[in-house]
Image 1 (cartoon, rainbow, N blue to C red):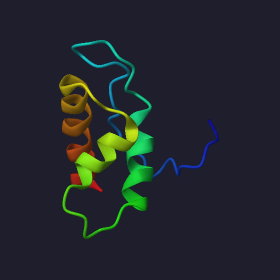
Image 2 (image 1 turned 60 degrees about the vertical axis):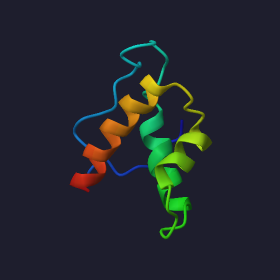
Image 3 (image 1 turned 120 degrees about the vertical axis):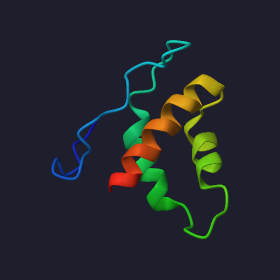
Image 4 (image 1 turned 30 degrees about the horizontal axis):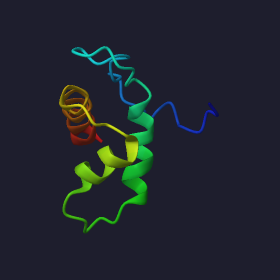
Length: 77
């Protein structure tokens, strides 16, 4: 993976490597989530749902882990 992110902007807390329930790998979703946030229209109503579909998150447990982490991260940025 090419290093394209400024280390000063990255959050201190990173997404867990695996889902806590089903053990699926989700650690790489954090950077992809931030990329998709830039691509999506700001006036879109269901941004999170659209991003989860684009990332391929289908299981509720994985969605819960990613969403709870990303809302914490985006609140601080």
